Amino acid sequence: MIKTVIIEDEKPASRKLERMLSNFSDIEVVGKIESVEEGVAWFSENDHPSSSFQTLFWGWSVFRYL
Image (cartoon, rainbow, N blue to C red; front, side, top):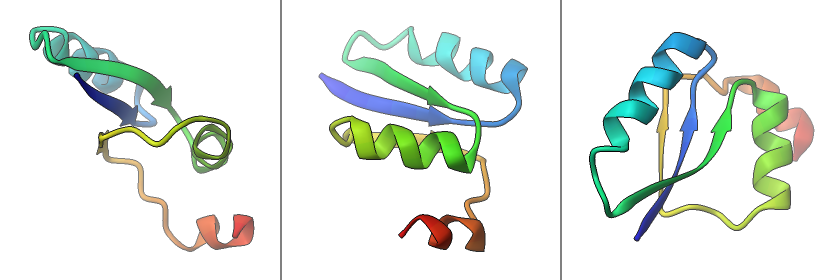
């Protein structure tokens, strides 16, 4: 099973990607993240997935959490 996270700030795009991924029995979406802050919190509280699908630009703002 491939555990993946969707990192997308546009809800329609996130829902569409999740629907597309649901066609694959070996992919499990274990999280949906909509912002850098939410992503930092999610990754600090959960096991890291095998993959991620993302369009959210993390940019320099992520460094304030390091």
